[in-house]
Image (cartoon, rainbow over all chains, first blue to last red; front, side, top):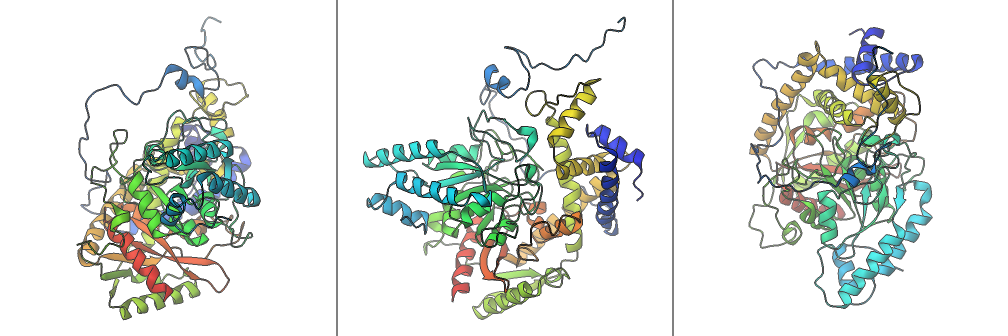
Length: 99
Length: 483
């Protein structure tokens, strides 16, 4: 299939990634080759075959509803790039409409 | 001077007072130090390993019962969590990240007395077949420094190959333990999907991933598997299937299971144009040897061989794009210094600066196969093919005890030689991805040497949860090949 700039831009947005123009050009070429390669699958007749959704045959693996394997707040905040004593901090994203 | 042959011999040397854990750790630290150019370790826990060794020596001298892996020196691929230690998946996006818990496999190693000596270089997020995708540089094959060690668990393979530790834990999503084991001339075991808990393993493709073992011998791999396998409250996909005492039953004549005798091989795999002629010749000779030894060796028609790598790439990239969405630079991970306009832009800066090229390419491909308009044609189609493969696998194992093939179609290639073609690199996985697509165990056994001097192996696969049969037949194959 033909890989367009629009397709790459849309996928980049969905993937939450930025690409430079030269990266996009390289990616388009790779995509065309890779999609050409994986499209071989259309040669296989899969009429009436259920998709495989789960590996293994375990169903409803349950355990008692006890609190365990949890982490402390201090541990949870340990690796955050920006935080205070209680919260993860992110840039202000809700804009004041009257400003 | 310490020389490692097997865990069993090492533990008896400890018990006889011929060596100590402290001396042995110091030996491994000096081997690691003299092999820095191989770039196998991202970090060495030198002081901590030495302190633990002294503690283990003291415990042993005080007559405390010994764990199954008492004093065994283990390295961890940098995708396996070890509490209080750095964990990066060889990615800049996790630079500075510290694990706040142990992977279940690590917990179990420690409970049985293992010493963790360091974390090992790998392809970023375990994506790659040559260890050339690490943010922390290439790993070199110890047998020939111009060649790759394989991937994605390249550092873990080289660490065992070059005698920098006794055992490594890696992860295998499409061959990432078996393929580097093949390239480095050691044993690499991928257990059945769900045999070892994935709790604390950084996810690449959750329905494919499995922690695997690098060792110098089948017996050492069997003992390690026995320790780390089994059900786990923290991973509901870890099977409740009981763990067999693999190590004691490995060579036991008391084992009352039937000796595997019927061996199948995929005809198409041997006819594949990408198969190296010398590997083909050695493998065919090995099939003849097995027949001469009384094995029933028969070809299996496997017309889907060409399709397994495409199916694998669709499904694993889809799962990866979903799994890696958690790396957004909020709770952990790299945060960009570039000011953002809005939240989406903020995530994009963090992720684009943090992830490497191959990881981004796979996220994009996975997003594509899952996106509206393409989902059925790609993702659902590949899931249907996966189901066909699973049914064919059951049919194969109703006729055969094991399937064998070369592990990889070529010996270890030169660094930089495959970087221009993603498809060519994918084909290095053609014999190994099958086991991950259908969830069966597989092992690479170091049986041969190529005319170019590089080692290569044979892959053996058995049915789900038949690790004991797999390990037993592996022992026999190694003995046969030595004759």
